Image 1 (cartoon, rainbow, N blue to C red):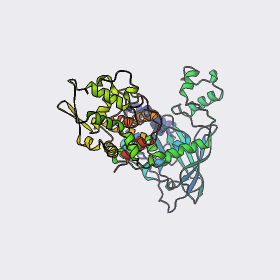
Image 2: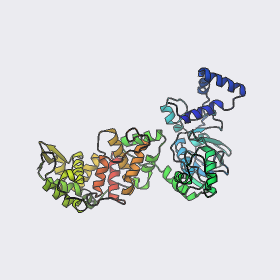
Image 3: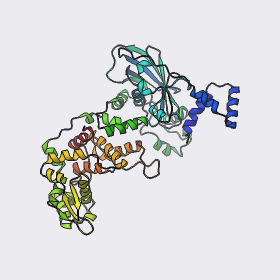
Image 4: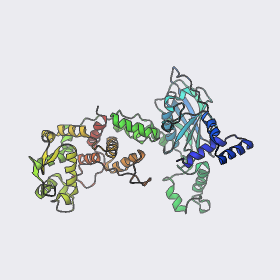
Length: 484
């Protein structure tokens, strides 16, 4: 189904520059249903001109303006000439302050009918054209005064004009902002008109007389606005910190995770690339023998408790004595509310057993829970057990479990504090298109068999709530996503 934003964009293309007579003909064609010639006209658009790749990479000092904003919203940037357009898209998003939640397009001119580059999303939708992925900045601009247009969010219609101010020989190491003015408008505020209303209201210290339409009251409006947003705020250091995160090269990962990252890129979401580009994501994955012993302690205690095997109850649970012993030795009994002597009433014990089974450390045969060959081999060797766990991650065969597992490994491996794991994983899964049931806006849960393992390695048996960063757990997650 055609979205309203798509219709708005199409109307702009159809109506731009038409005469009154052409307008009447367009209206008659729409009313009669005879619009094929109009779409044939659009499909016959010119392709953008792409110059040859220069022999040397140069520095481009450019000014990026949000077209139509008064007072001007702009950034001065130092860019490498060999910046590919998808990377330039990331730079523009970060420098301006957008959240990359909508489609975008690069054009060679201001007019909506000007030649433009297609994105990976456009190709997926069946559109032909020059793919932006194959084009560098210095193939489109070469001298002072050259310009490139960038449109973001076809509904709100944010137009950006990038103009070359100076060309220098020495290219910068990475994209950098040297100056600018004004804050980026809030996403989905209704374009320049909506932004002007918001800016006037905030500058008036939230005068009720200037409350923009659409808000029930001032409290509703202030809750909707980004935290501490003010139209006149600009901080070049904040912009450069955001640019550093957005342009960091992602660490090399396994093929399956790389394919997921590519899929997110095609949808316009770059959060996973940012996660994989964080400094800690590039740190070596080695851990010490002492760290391996600490991380695997809970699993080794469980293997010791079942020893040569235990007979399960008629309902398939661990015997109460074994549940109580494991709860005491692992630390669960120290914080769990209850006697911790029944597996069905002590979920942390049941979760550990399920996790050990998913890792291939234990198995159930004829009503007996016994250690597998791998479990017996690794039981007295913490480093061997750690390597076995790394080799099994992520767990699961269903699409959701695999996606959730990879996202958990990427997030934990990047050094995010434990209290933020679930939020970031959920956000990544939402970007991949996962939802709760049929509710489009409900983010999916972060829970997965893989995240459970990482939580056990971090010591969730010893405390009721994990906090902070465990560098050894982060190294474990990185080892899983970087293994060959």
